[in-house]
Length: 106
Image (cartoon, rainbow, N blue to C red):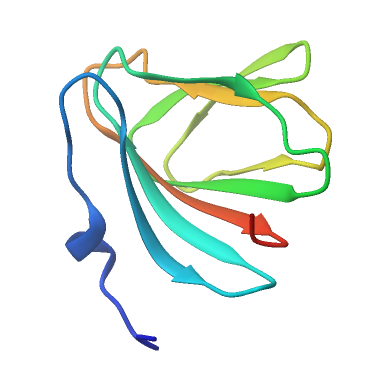
């Protein structure tokens, strides 16, 4: 297990679906990077027994949090407690880079 990593080494893209890379995973925590190109969506979903956060590293987008739609940009943390439907859409013109944490890990 790597104890130090650079975020830039985990940023990327792929056609058709947003890009994901794992930074760290244990029995108690999963940290990763999600990159959404303009127009890409992580459809709303929920984790019944897992809390989740999105830290916006770069760009901005629209976040689903239950029935709410919230716009957030770089430097903001978005929380999705266990059981709350959540997702994100990059409706901008630049890549959206998110650090994502889920605890306990899936």
